[in-house]
Length: 115
Ligand code: FES
Image 1: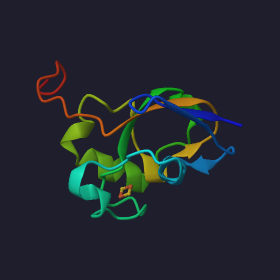
Image 2: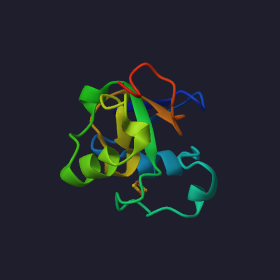
Image 3: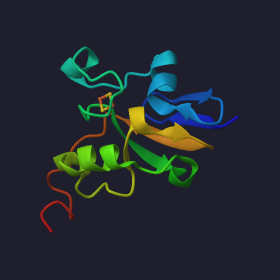
């Protein structure tokens, strides 16, 4: 069974292969949504973008980004500079061990932001 490590929460959970990252995080009590998005989100339809996470280890152990996910992330400023690690939890299936950072901060001053 794959292990998901939530780095902010210092929590590890084991999930069935192919499990949905959003559902497993919520089931484990992980605070996936920042601020008002705890109640104002699209509930996993991939349209609000508020379930953004960074897969800091094991991106190869997740499903590939679909068209909807790529399009939604593509219009988010937070995606700039995080293209290789950012995913929508609701659109991500877990196939192996991964490490996840929830509610990533937007780095407006990162070296890649305006380049
Ligand atoms: S819950 Fe809205 S995009 Fe994932």
